[in-house]
Amino acid sequence: MMTINRLDLADARLLIEGAAHKAREIGVPMCIAVVDESGTLIAFERMDGGKVTSVTIAQDKAYTAAAARKATHEYNAVNVPGSLTFGIHTEVGGRLSSVGGGLPVVVNGEVVGGIGLSSGTPQQDMECAQAGIDHFLARRPQG
Amino acid sequence: MMTINRLDLADARLLIEGAAHKAREIGVPMCIAVVDESGTLIAFERMDGGKVTSVTIAQDKAYTAAAARKATHEYNAVNVPGSLTFGIHTEVGGRLSSVGGGLPVVVNGEVVGGIGLSSGTPQQDMECAQAGIDHFLARRPQG
Amino acid sequence: MMTINRLDLADARLLIEGAAHKAREIGVPMCIAVVDESGTLIAFERMDGGKVTSVTIAQDKAYTAAAARKATHEYNAVNVPGSLTFGIHTEVGGRLSSVGGGLPVVVNGEVVGGIGLSSGTPQQDMECAQAGIDHFLARRPQG
Amino acid sequence: MMTINRLDLADARLLIEGAAHKAREIGVPMCIAVVDESGTLIAFERMDGGKVTSVTIAQDKAYTAAAARKATHEYNAVNVPGSLTFGIHTEVGGRLSSVGGGLPVVVNGEVVGGIGLSSGTPQQDMECAQAGIDHFLARRPQG
Image (cartoon, rainbow over all chains, first blue to last red; front, side, top):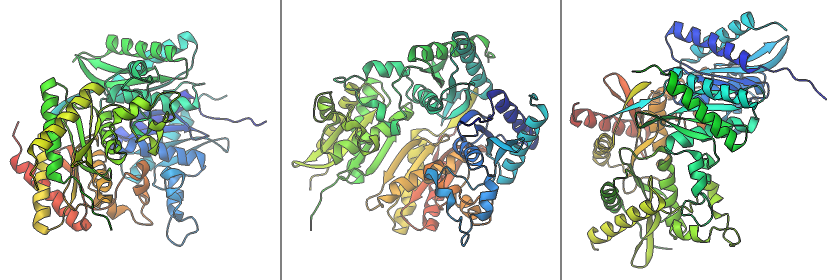
């Protein structure tokens, strides 16, 4: 038997809250998705003005980051012609995202979920995703 | 050009809040999805203990209710062998749901979005979806 | 080698025009799709107020009627438990529609395309599809 | 609640008319799709001789341009190995198009829909899409 640690809904809300705060600060309404360690959606919010395509993209980034335990921009770096990883972005029906903006959420060295942002530039999406994680780690109830 | 009214994120949160309150009351953790009038996701929450399959089902119910402007249990009633509507549930890649638990959200006689619940019995899902709408209509800011 | 007769764009517009005229007459804004004999879309119109789900359903009805050379309500009649055809509506990824509202377009005994309507009841959809065909047959340029 | 402006069917027909006129001028029969601001199809025409694959591609270009509020050729420019956006074209089940020929339709600074063309070179598709927008903006009824 295994015991798994994963984000709960209260954690997911903290992640979204921190990411949305940064998104408002930089003036880009975002789609924000949080998934658990298995890649399954826990919570999602489309800020007023977030893009329709980003509803899916944010979820796919969060899924990739959690389920592959790797930031989507790390996949981006190796998803270049000639690299043995090239083409990874069409896997899992195209859900595996190599576009910056998906980060694994790590607690005590363990991936417990993922967060994905979409609607800005990849750099903006990454910045807001990180802000969500920082907010979560600072505010989460300590067990 | 047409002018359309749709739910915003604050509205979606009210809908989820009301549905989740009822779900806690009856002791069934739910997946709760709210979409706009075009069927596009605005907000989603999986209560701790909500089912994995329900992540998709709740979204499909909300999509159907808003985009077809019809409660999913109304499709259920006509989706029987011999009815001319039989087989509708496999449409739109199977997203069109005829399982009870999806309700259109109507404001001033106009469908402005939809709510979908999943994890309980269809009857429980329907009850919680209605509770979300009641809460939203009672609390929403009046324009 | 084979020679195939199929609807052209001018024909498709006549079919849509006739169907839309009837839809306005009965007061139900419809989605209207016309495909060629291979099931490939030629023209589509969503009347203002047509349902979002009907965008796909109308196309699937037209596809089924032309590609299977059978009205969707004829599939409906045999898509009942116990019939050897039961379950046909999940075929072709769920595109094969057994919901009334799709009719083959027949010229000189040959299926040259299909028309599919969605947004009303199946009976209304069927009535408007037939009106489209009647209009087309009355007005089409004779070769 | 939010209020959204979107193209209606009369607008969509103007967009198609302008694009088709240019397509005839350059001698390339096109598939032409117009969607609303949520990416949902309003109208579609395949000119006689338009390509079968283009039925889907034109719709995906229009969807992308409207739902991501970005011309598909703009995605093309950043969809190169080494860019943080690389791989975006497989998102949303591959519907997100980075092939030139999809343009957002902007009225009063707001994206109200999208137009997508396919069957020519991307340059030809882009030229005809722009011609559709120019025609629409010149002829549309002023509110």
